[in-house]
Length: 259
Image 1 (cartoon, rainbow, N blue to C red):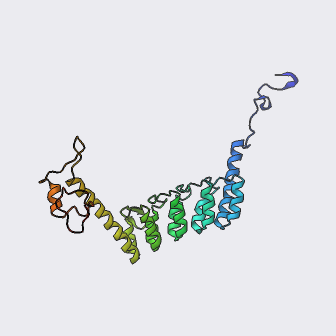
Image 2 (cartoon, rainbow, N blue to C red):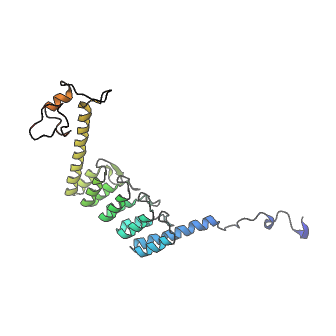
Image 3 (cartoon, rainbow, N blue to C red):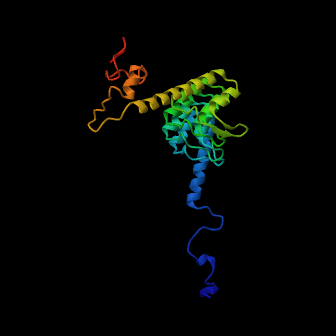
């Protein structure tokens, strides 16, 4: 018993701390960030680039989700607002970030919606062409499914893999070409078939070159014997597509062929 009848165990005598139910400073800051993220997502969804700019100037973080796990960049990708996208990306919004609520990614959203300019802008900021969303859809499969030919072509030109299979609900394991055929998008089927054929030709050419062209010798000369497979293939004309005729080892040059 202390002076005045107070007990030594009374809570008011303990070290200062939070009262029950009282939020810490870090909790309050986190809630404030999510609140501002919600405001940023809302104005992004409205296409209000001025409002987005004002909130960014007030230090709203484009890589913080709101209370529902949504992001401003994804909202802009959905609506296709290029100016909003540009401002968010300039503020270092992550073009590859997925939402915790859905697994959605900005490029996949824009590809599904058919927003070509948004797709180009995200690709310019190194968005992953083959990254799937939470349901398994890649940007290429999304565009192929929805019939967006120009976006399919843009993704292929940026290195999207036409062979990449995805596993999605109601489809199972499918490749972009299978999706396009199922949806009867003829132009996209042709674009994907051309891309697949080009990849096959490139792989075949690389394999042939590796098989018939010897590695440089110890002295770096890399000479090809007159009766070697490379020389015989050259005389048969099989190397014409693999090189520009930089030497005469493969045999006499045909008329009009650069040596």
